Amino acid sequence: MRIARTRRPAVWLASLTGWRADLAALLMGAGSALALPPVHAIPVLLLTVPALLCLIEGARGSAVAARRGWWFGLGLYTAGLYWVTEAIFLEADRFWWLVPFAVPALAAMLALFTAIAAAVARKARPGWPMVFTLAGAWVLTDLARQFVATGFPWNPLGSVWELPGRIGDILIQPAALTGVHGMTFATVLLAATPLLSWRWRLGGIGLLALWCVFGIIRLDQPSPSTSGVTVLLVQGNVAQGQKWNQALLVAIFRHYLSLTRDAVGKVHGPAVVVWPETASPALLQTDPEARALIAEAAEDNQALIGAVRFDAAGRPRNSLFALGADGVIEGIYDKWHLVPFGEYQPDWLPLGIQVVPGGGFAPGPGPRTLYLPGIPPVGPLICYEAIFSGQVVDEANRPAWMVNVTNDAWFGNSAGPRQHLAAARLRAVEEGLPLLRAANTGISAAFDSKGRELARLNMRQAGVVSIGLPEALPVTLYARVGLFLPACIGMLSVFFGLSWWSKTLKSTPLSNL
Picture 1 (cartoon, rainbow, N blue to C red):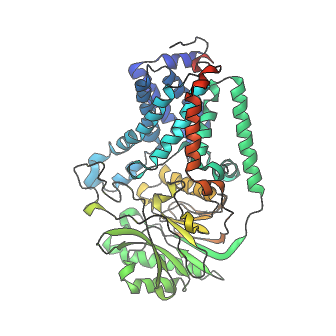
Picture 2 (cartoon, helix red, strand yellow):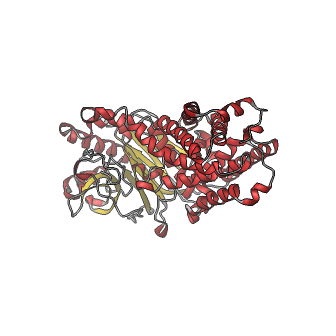
Picture 3 (spheres, one colour):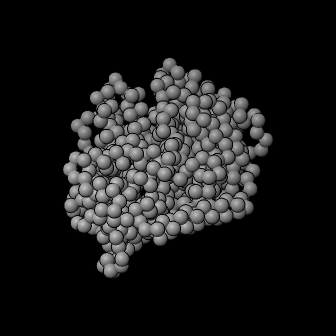
């Protein structure tokens, strides 16, 4: 392949072979993780994505490009998901031997998707066709990450724009049009511009300017008023090591009752109480006394309580109970996106060991809207269901708001809970629905239908977030079209980069620019 001699760093990267190229890809991938929440060092992508493109261009065929893409992905996901080890430390007496392997093994599987994107990009002509092919293939493989082996679409590159405050509010608004996957597409294109000609760089600046203008205009549009209902997000701050301690179960239950009672006493008008994922140590389905105590503390307002239940087959389910007056069960939602190895034992990767006793939880049927007396219809999300873009609500029975209950105590005071919160914020923008989040040890927060943070309770604090429930926006474009739109963007971009007529247009090797 012809390599020009005009830009030394690009030429050097493209000329690397063997383990040196693999090491460079690994380091560039790890560096890319700095752009993710909560660090948000977005400019680093202006170095790492061009470096990946140079390594792809210099590869002798798609197989070598795939290998370099895999090393890039290994670095990206190992650095971005380091916090998964925190959960293993809590079970160190049983799984101590997994500590050095868990995160690299997970990253190695996720890196296969990056490898595919790199292999596809290698088939494109160097220059802008390769850039468009990589961006489109990246989107398509991220979509695949959402479905393959039940899915784990954590940390898409589009999430780098979720900065805190007004700047972040502006930058995440395009999610209402294309979802986070469309933002990933634009992120790869923008990050690649240092390798392209000045015309493409100006185009990138123009795209970013339009992006910001759209965000400002959308944020400055009149926002819906509140619904008149107060939501109380109860954060018990119970350490994971104490959560299922038999000697502490009663004290934990009383702690949540006390927080609820104090918060409800300060509210005038209708309210809904929200406890985090599995916050109730009582089996509410078969414990009317516990339900009555919750209803009493909530002063017969609606209460959405995270708890475990057992179905007719005796399988446990991770559930959200809707309790009304006198503790009557008015609805149940069962989590349907379960965490592999954390909540169920997957049969697609037999380990020869029983990580989850009894095979784990049984999944629910899918997204559901709960219609409850006195409050707008609500779409529940339990734990990491909030990371699945385009799969968070029942579109046939669209809710007026989303509630996300979670227990991030497993991951300590790391980047994990903060990345999880950032994902939930994007779902509010994508759907045009307010999202209210109750987390056991934090971060509990409320976002309006444009993703603006209205209130929060930080990590490792016990308390209650009291917030008026915002109303929903009209259905967004992304909520109407869903994952079909970014899939089309990805396929068209790959076609654009690989098509025969793109080879007739002027294209210059990336390392020649």
